[in-house]
Amino acid sequence: MPFTYETQASGIGDEGVHPFVWYQRKLEVPKEKAGQRVILHFQAVDYIARLWINGTYVGQHQGGYAAFSFDITPYLEFGASNTVVVKADDSQSCTRLEESSAGLITISSAFTFRRQGSGKASGWSTCHPRI
Image 1 (tube, helix red, strand yellow):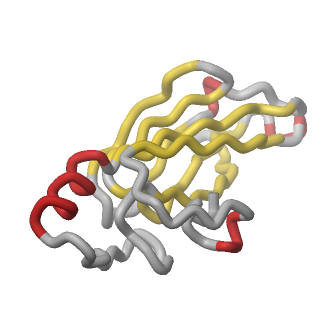
Image 2 (tube, helix red, strand yellow):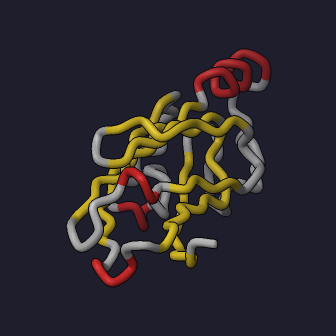
């Protein structure tokens, strides 16, 4: 995140189709934010997103065009480095595309990247006071 593996900006530049893509990032939430909720927002993930924080499964979202969020507060260690892992699963749509329209590149509003034939993910986090 925030670039797909197909783009040069990702540092990978692999234009092959991969039905599953794993993303891992570190997230540090300052100790001073303890007591607030931390929400992890995604613009979209094509097509199924599964999320883990510090090795604990948080949940999943299905739908490649919709923004979504997870409350990750209970999974965090405030003031420490937290590991965020996202598995983007686009296996079904990749298979359908290759069988039905080989050579075409799909258009997805999930991200504005050149190729949209496999998993993409972009996200950010915000802190909110508890109510």
